[in-house]
Length: 64
Figure 1 (cartoon, rainbow, N blue to C red):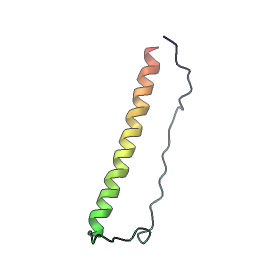
Figure 2 (figure 1 turned 30 degrees about the horizontal axis):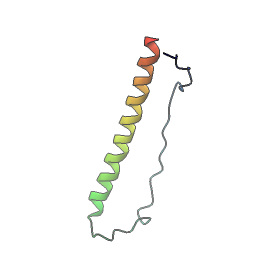
Figure 3 (figure 1 turned 180 degrees about the vertical axis):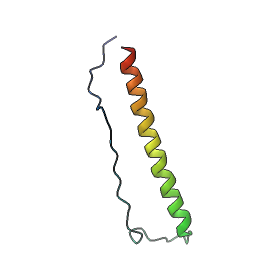
Figure 4 (figure 1 turned 90 degrees about the horizontal axis):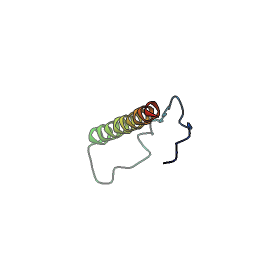
């Protein structure tokens, strides 16, 4: 099996700018608080995913 190159960054930084509240109109009549909660949870899930991928890559490097 071919050995992977060490091309993974030491640190990964994910920066997201908060969108303006008026960017996406709420045509469905959804509660704006619910929309904010869903956005918050999506950002947290994205952070958790990136952190898990970085940790998996680090563990893979340590095993080589």
